[in-house]
Image (tube, rainbow over the protein chains, first blue to last red):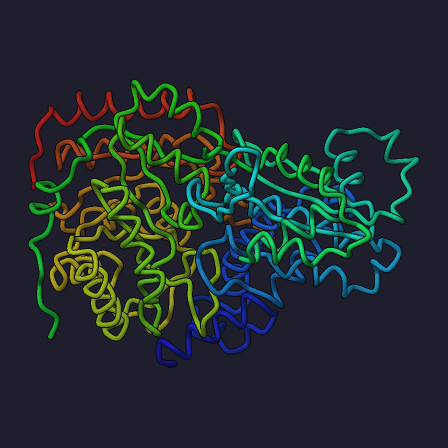
Amino acid sequence: MPDLATLQSDFFRAILGSDGDAVLPVIDGDPVAAARRLAVYRNTALSGLYDALRSIYPITERVLGSEFFEQTSLAFARENPPTAPVLARYGAGFPSFLRGLPALTELPYIADLATLEWEIDQAALAPSQGSQQFTLPVAGGAARMTLDPSLRLFASTTRVHAIWSAIRSGDDHSLSSLDWRGGDEHLAIFFTIGEAVVTPLSRPAWIVLSGLVDGKDLATAVAALDAAEIDEAALAHEILSARFIRIELDH
Amino acid sequence: MIQRIAPPAMTLSASSTIPAAAGIGLRFPHHREVAASPKGIAWIEVHPENYMAGGAALDQLDGIRRDVPISLHGVGLSLGSAAGVDRDHLAALKAMVERIEPGLVSDHLSWSVSGGVYLPDLLPLPYTEEALALVASNVETVQTALNRPLLIENPSRYLQFRHATMTEAEFLSALVERTGCGLLYDLNNLFVSAKNLDQDPLDLLFGLPLEAIAEIHLAGHARKPLEDGSELRIDDHGSAVSAEVWDLYTRLIHRTGPVPTLIEWDRDLPELGVLKAEALKAHRFLTIVSGGARRVA
């Protein structure tokens, strides 16, 4: 009989693949009955991973259709099982997996759509306290600004925000007339009052905020902009009015 | 040599803030309702792994714990893994225990990790001396890290290993003796295992050290017909507690007296009121059948 480590290794192979040859002989009963009983564990484990992916990628599932999404999720799960029991962090590689599927070349936006859903899901897991702070000189003092800790930034060359919004709201008319190309979307994703919010940004604001999220100071973040695209008044107005930035005035 | 670090049951019941009443397993869709109106809920139990990523759910749990006693019921320690307990996961659990200050902490007699991969299922152990020594060592590691006794839950089983040398009751009894852990006895799991393995549930139940039972779980299960005309019972937590499991429950608490009891429901989660009604049913059995005083502890 195998030792426990060998048995567990064989058991995993039987669940993630179809190779039950090593483990079936140590299970009580005839091989057919043993295989049926082993299948209960395989089904529970894989359906648990499928359910985890479904909960993160509901809009992607709508685009792909339930059957294709299930097949794709199970294929991903078999190739990329989790390495930790916190399933809320499982599935980060699913968008890349979709990008690599030849069957999805006719949906070039699908990987970015899935990435947007991943960012939305992860925004909900941010701590409620603590984030980067920076100051901005204003007339008579300075504004101390704090980025919402859930803020995540994402850019796509396809119109994933428009696609995501139309599907989420059930707006089939908009969806049918939507051209997914030519997006060049710059998005902020944050979590507030119990739900994730996705809001478009201008490219300059997105670049500056990306620098701040990466830990750069404001001057360095602004320096990343091309001189031609700096409209200080418009940029200041966009950043100061953003819902994901808390502002306190120091005088 | 495994040292006993705490006597079973007595230390558990003395240290626990979980009342000998019927509580409910809290799932995310019911968070807001429980937070807004905790009245009538004796206690709740959550899976700590669902909160370890942080976020709004953990913040809500911080609020709920001020009104309702909480038990942490792990699914990720993988106490039967040959590779031992994952130190990072144990550290995350310890942080959760320190933050939530639960009345009870539990996990399963099963394994989920091999070769650094985790699968979301409670996989079966062969009940052998090798497995017993390993699980006892892992339980001791966890109890030492948390500085408190752990409750171990019997899993639902769908198969047996040819080389097993002990029954589940013998295995759990020896584990209690060696480690001082307590038992979380899931009567639905017991019934599912007994049916699937063609055993008498009462033999499984009363072969246990009843004084170590510090918590009871109740849940529903499904019946799956097989091609050969037989059937398997599937522990899916997707329906009300079956009549057979209620029968086992009344028999058990008649022997033990009142024990904290939990209604679990995961698949096709109903309205909170349905869970409260199941808990009320359990509570009536607790107060009527058991006569109000712990007997075997």
